[in-house]
Image (cartoon, rainbow, N blue to C red; front, top):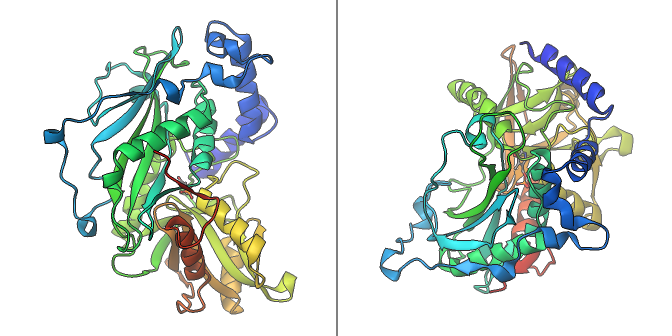
Length: 428
Ligand SMILES: *Cc1c(COP(=O)(O)O)cnc(C)c1O
């Protein structure tokens, strides 16, 4: 199906269902549906007005810990040669849920494989959502977690989108702190630029039945993977491929939830970009070719804004139509710049390819970069269009680069050089 008709179909569907494209409305509908409808409603039976939602959750106080025997602990890889997501720590967190019995006690166990029924819904209908965040070993050797509460809120949003059960965000946060504390030796030593322990919370629907329906069983689990310095070869700007036929998300879809099903269809497009010697896909949307995201990152465009007397303005697409994944780095950049930078404004609005072209012509494009947990910021040097034209994006010197300034501010918080409530010291 052509991208435009796919979009039209989704838009029409969106109108039919709710008249609104935002995930919030859908969430409300989905929730209301569950609460009113047994037997699924039982999971929420204790969430009535006179009991707290926490009683429908697991509790960190029930955590059962089985430590990996000393002689089976894995050797730590050299942070300098680490490839993202290939090595894992010694332990994992696992919490099972079943519609009849509810959430079971959280378990921290040695890292191990799952056994799963071949009909498990996740394997057929992609009932999966994930998160990505990091623990950092600071300059004071203390370990900090960066805005983990935000990741858990986003996981809860994805969980609702998949009609999987809710849980208490604070209880999951406590369990993750405990897991990281147990595997704290896996948080690479600081000093090596931007090493960290990547934290991957995941939820999967495991009911062993083939009906396209609610999963009455699921597993919430968390695994940890040490990551090396992102900018091994320095702060290297990337080249992008922008083909308007490639659509990542659409109104009424689930692009604003971190669901595995959003990523599988993008990999072939990424490979096309690589085959053209380009590094990432620039995801466009609509007939006017709005910029939405770059690879798995939010996009930031720094311009001299004629509507603001030529002031430097950071433009990033808005979250209100569900096309954009609400990145935590995106949000952090917006808040930092809005609250404490006097020389740059932030505006959440769409910007399209033809505006980028005219900004370049008028020398008003300052720089562009992706934003996400993996790299914090990733500078962009060019955009290749389908007609073969290439937009050359300015890449300012480090001393004047907005991206570099943001990288410094955020990593200062993450590694404890600047005390900030976004970085919580690990409580073990
Ligand atoms: C995860 C992700 C981001 C970045 O989110 P962060 O919370 O900042 O890491 C941006 N876009 C997409 C599509 C993503 O999957």
